[in-house]
Structure formats: C-alpha cells, structure tokens
Amino acid sequence: MITASKFVREHFRTLAPYTPIVPFDVLSEQLGRPIDDIIKLDANENPYGPSPKAIAAVQNLPFPHIYPDPESRKLRALLADFLQVPADQILCGAGADELIDLILRLVLEPGEAILNCPPTFGMYAFDTAINAGTVISVPRKADFSLDLDEIQAQVVKNRPKIMFITSPNNPNGGVISDKDLKRLLSMPILIVLDEAYVDYAGPGASRMTWVEEYDNLIVLGTFSKWAGLAGLRVGYGAFPKELMPYLWTMKQPYNINVAGDAAAIASLQDLDYLQANLQLLIDERERLSQKLSEIDYLEPLPTQSAFVLCNVTGDKQAADLKQTLADHGILVRHFNKPGVSNMIRISVGKPEHTDKLIEVLKDLL
Ligand SMILES: Cc1ncc(COP(=O)(O)O)c(C=O)c1O
Image (cartoon, rainbow, N blue to C red; front, side):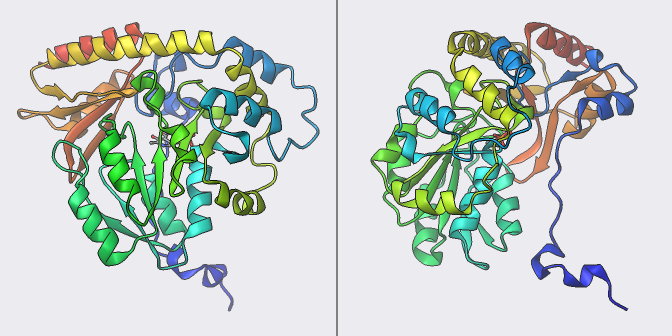
C-alpha cells in the first residue's frame, strides 16, 4: 500500500509549524465580538491602513486579467528614488518574508548553517528549517544587545553562511549601532539586515544605502508596516550587484500581484500622507510607553519600533494577561521563552486603542 506521506522530504517530517496570526473574521467568531470591537495589537500592523491613493489604485486596476510585470519596473524605479539605491540592486518580494526564503534558497546547501540572534523574528529560523539548513544561535544579552565576541567566535569556528540581524529588533525595538554593524560586516559572512520597522526609528536610521559599499550586505524593507499594506504582501530588498542575476533567475516570475504592485506604487506617490500617520504612531508609542510604565506590574522597555515590549512582574503571568486582554477584545503577543520570559509585546495603535488598553490594565491592579 502506497501512502502519500512516504514521498515527503525527510526534514519536513519534524518541522514545527509557524504560528501565524488569525484573520479578523475568525477572531470575531472566536472572541464572540464584532470586528469593530476588536483592538488588534498583536502583529505590528499599521492601524491607519493604506493611503487613500493606494486603496483607489487597487479599486481601479486597469488589467487584473493580465499577469503582472515580472520585473516590477515602475515600482523598482520609484523605490530607487525612495531608498537612494540603484534600481538594478533592488528586488521586490511577496512581503519581506518571501525575500528571506529566497535568500536562504539561494545560499544554503542542505545541512549548512545560518547564525541567528534570538530573541528575534521567528521567520529566519523557520525558513532555514524549510530549506533543510541548521541554526547556530548566539542569544542576545539581557539588554537585547548583540554578543559580538561570541558571534565572531562562531563565525570563525563553525562558518555559518548567513547572519540575520533585525533593526529595530522584533520583539524589543532596539537599533544596532553603526559601530556594531561595521564589525559584523568585517566578518566573512553574508549579513541580512531586516529593516521592516526602520521607518519608526526616525529619518536617517536606515542602512539601505550601505549595500553599495559592502558586498556582503543585504537590507530588507517592507510596505507592510510604514505603508499599511500587510495584507497586500509587498516587500523589497537591496542586494549586492553580484547576487542579482541569480535572484532574477530563481524568483517566481509573478511574485508581486497587480494589486500589491499598484498599491505600493501609489504609496510611494503619497509619502506625505503616510509619513504623517507614521509620526502619529511614533508620538503614540511614547505616550503608550509612558502610560504602561505607570502600571505597577509592567516594565516597558525602550523602543524605536512599532511596538513596546514589557516585562510582566509581581505575581502576574504574561499568558494570563494576554488572555484577560483578549477577553476584553484586545489582542497582544505574549512570550515565555529564554530571553523573553514572562513578557508581552504590544503594537502601537491609535490613541483610543491605548486608552482602552490602559483602562483594562488599570482595572487588573
Ligand atoms: C522583523 C520582521 N521582518 C519581516 C516581517 C515580515 O514582513 P512582510 O509582511 O513584508 O513579509 C516582519 C513581520 O512582522 C517582521 O517583524
């Protein structure tokens, strides 16, 4: 008797699934609340959503029945201007997520290693497992800074091929310094700098232009956060010139669909609108952090990102707190693993979201 599972590749048999977010309609059913009554602060989405021009562009697609431009020419030309990087070093993906997978597929032979610095974004380790690679972990220090000496030792000893660095890091929101990044770049390893949240760190925080200077640097960005297009799945990356021909050859030709393409182009043509919303979120982050610090059982950490990570103290448990908030229609992430034990991460929302959250948290005192 032939069973289908017998054909599955060995390394997939033990792969733990990624835990994705739950969509609004399912959440609404699970929580027994209308969608409008749910405050979603668990996945760092932009609560202000897309620019009206992006929405109009999606509503008025001229050729939805025709395949999209496989080279995303117009989008890449606008990105070149926005990022100050030559268009021939830019590649777009169905979210930064697709680019992470693409990079791993390009570089890793089965069994080869990446270097990862947890606590950080889970996709690097997950996609490595998908690609039959292994992970060398060099945990961040208690203050979430990188353990550069140990990283250097591991690079020399075990020769990992790629290292992923998130700046600002998810889940704490800290930014890597120029000095530390330069030290990493001096090592014989391909550095992928994930800047999904860099726009929340203020002007000049991005190192996207460094790709012209360093041959071992890739920098990733995304329209999901600053442009509010998470559902349309458009990310971008700046790559060393030498990698571009390989990436063009191996990427799926139509990875950016026409709706995402049109929305991303319209976003780049409405930067003032999106920048104003970003500023609202940055201001709100400071207010949220201040309010959280007034709650006895929470210790918010400094952040330059779209979220605030908090220690949960006293006799309170992060998992219970997350559940209690969910019972009030407020969704946050909780963590309980090395480096992030008994913590919650709260995405920055609109002022009214902060007010409701703080009201509920105060009631639990
Ligand atoms: C650090 C980091 N990188 C990348 C992503 C994924 O971005 P995209 O929506 O463009 O796939 C996320 C999403 O939360 C993230 O936190």
